Length: 372
Ligand SMILES: Cc1ncc(COP(=O)(O)O)c(C=O)c1O
Image (cartoon, rainbow, N blue to C red):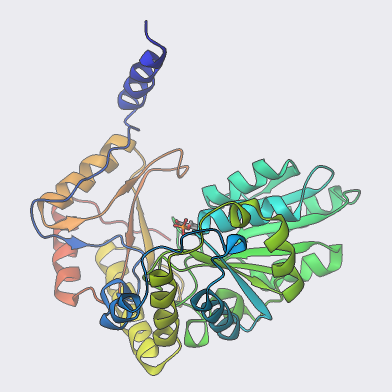
């Protein structure tokens, strides 16, 4: 036996349960991507490539070690203005932003109230913080309130939630959550990863659309903004504190300048008439995609549309069958989600004709649903 032999058993176990993940690799044919987070199609926008080309590839060091560049400062100030907050602080990824910020805000003796379907990076931030974690039922404000009442003795309390849930596409009841936080003197944290650029006036996000007072917002730059990285947004003192205490900010190389410049160009587009046009197209494609899937959703729901196929192997088979018919959609399985599914997502750049073809392919595979 060699020390790494345990890996063979672990992989065989995942394989046997239909849960082994493999990278799809570059495909040998052109297919239509129906699961991307590039909601507005900005990843290939020429303005982003042009902005990136005017800057270097790497920052060369951490922000606190000489790489606090003008391009970072400009993007932070642009993001803060866009989101209507006092300040913003860039992080290398949304994962870094969530982990570092949660762990900086709470610790032993504190309580985190976390939605049951929060993203893995929030869950990891909660674990790393060493605070006591109370998971409340998904979007269930009555359960949240019960847990707030029960945790009255805590030093500090932090309510943390995705704004828009990346695997289900539903939205957190942020106004209600903010009201509870005020009543019970808790901090609020909302992850706008799937909301920025998509929801709210000029794409300002779900927090803005709800008009909710949220203490800490995280916004990724890698989804509707078409780039990479993230920002934490809130009061100036929050940013000053994170510069000192968020280890995933302090001990890592600053965002590449080319990416920061591209992200700035992306915010300019999102916050413009062109952005409004792209959002109208996205809303149209989201409706068409849901119709093709046979999935009903409340009006105003965004681009994410899961099709539950509650058997991991069947979900993978369905994904393969769709690939053979020219559509790329990833099967998402436990432990990422509680129930296996094909996680579809619309994009402003999806052609309506392709969505119609997808509907026909789903009908052929007998995969359409009548779901709420
Ligand atoms: C809700 C949510 N938060 C955070 C992240 C992580 O962001 P990033 O990809 O920038 O690390 C993701 C997805 O990747 C997400 O869906």
